Image (tube, rainbow, N blue to C red; front, side, top):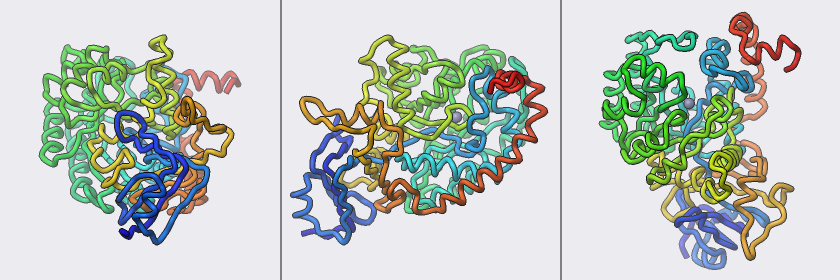
Length: 474
Ligand SMILES: [Zn+2]
């Protein structure tokens, strides 16, 4: 008999091992010092391992924690303030994001993490401005993160459609330095739960020289570059004006399309361009909800996958998605791609569940440690209550309905328990490592200052939401 810290038992498990979801009935997991020792049928595991603690759930489904590969948690206080309008970045979120203080971003991060972890997300691919406090918070909550600093040279102001960005070399240098310092401070910290990536905002936001420098810095440190790629017609117009080529051809010329790159969105990429990025070995982060709301576009993830590329899912940001919930991302990814292709067999439920777990982990370069319930990996696990209206009844023959119900019916509040590194982070649907009430009241307090500060610019720009407010329709 081998000793373990804990045994986790449930009538059903989706291990995500193999090429599908790796279903296992009457499942048990032996965990020791944060690592999965063994996965198997309960009678065998119980015989072989003696544990100090047994978490035994009678009507639950066990699965790996979700990987949310692309997020801007610092924007969470702007939830619901920028959708249903053209020119999202400049005219939608621009008037509000100008008034996000570092403290307001931190309060937003805390709210976003609370929301996501309660819906089963255990790995946070976060991207933003003040990331030191984000790393500290993720470490404190006890979750996992791949965190990058926004690196840009384009001066921060609202540009008119088609206006070429003006570059501020000193800003680019400052942000690059901040990313380098973040790497030195946090990469491998918190029991190796934190990794630091490098975050050039996009091909249009910095010079090719700085982009190449950032790329080399990431490569020298054996970490990834996390970058928006072909993120909308705004970027395409900037790149064509500046270099006379489209984003992906330009990035290929610079030489940054490689296995080290996590390419986010590919909103404007043609199927051929998506295939080129995949063939260069890069991974893709697909943000179906965000790009659907912001651009009304379905990015070419199916083409990317058919060229052999790995696709992760991302919730992006709350002002234009408008949540951090991987159940929402899975459902929208499946639905949008079916509608787009006019084919119900495109993006089946089991495939999008893989994107939210093992394929997402691979896209972050982390599949050796997370993404599946496999002996030797870290114990990042969710237990989902099947005695909820959205997940009942359970069918096992002739087909199992567990995965379709998770993807098409569940909303996230069915998540009962979440463990990261074998430690309980969510219990009975509540975050146990932080005070939830404080997170809500702090978010509301910082949010209160944003609206009045943004009001004049909001009505001057007069986007679709401003008109709807003026007309009394919103
Ligand atoms: Zn983004």
